[in-house]
Length: 88
Image (cartoon, rainbow, N blue to C red):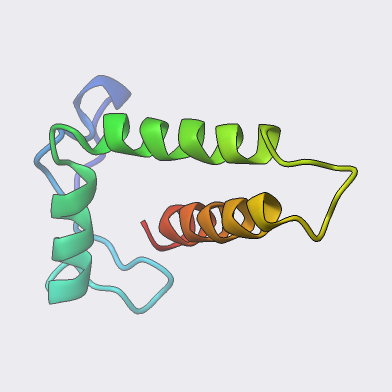
């Protein structure tokens, strides 16, 4: 593989032809799917919205009453946002 200058290494639609974690070759469907999702046009905006919503739910929790119904609902939303961030 020929080494290229940093300005020409990768474009948005190119996938590097190297193994990731010594197992995910570029020919695997899972890696191609992840690459396609991450390079979607609105992916960054979606992730920023998820981060903002997660921050808002954490900010409006009531620290004085841990057993309130509102905190339980907010904890569910916060957990789901964290799960989304971890999966995506």
